[in-house]
Length: 118
Image (cartoon, rainbow, N blue to C red; front, side, top):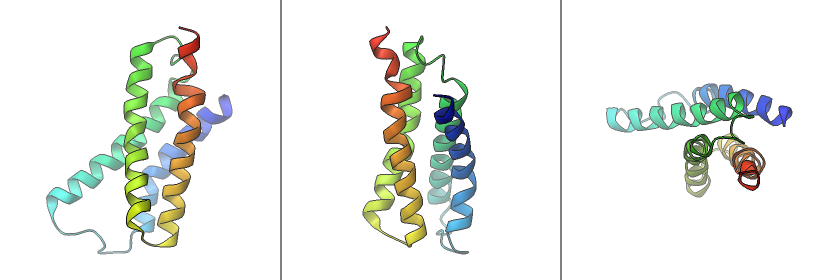
């Protein structure tokens, strides 16, 4: 479990850094609304990974915290599915797939693990 929590912290840092490295210069539309939505999704995705990484043991004992973690991790799942369905550069697809696989591992192991203990 400690390995998954450390992996969450690394994923949170990579979610903040990877979009700037993967998108070519000028790839984002100059529309301020779309840019703010993209920035909000990146911040929420990173916050979900950071929260699961920091509160790993407390997730078992707190149902509201588990629900909050599940909602925060839903953002990278939805974003990854949207990126995979739209296509794009191979590096972007690999990163979206990796985030999706990490979330698929985190949900049953850390987020919903406490349901049988409650």
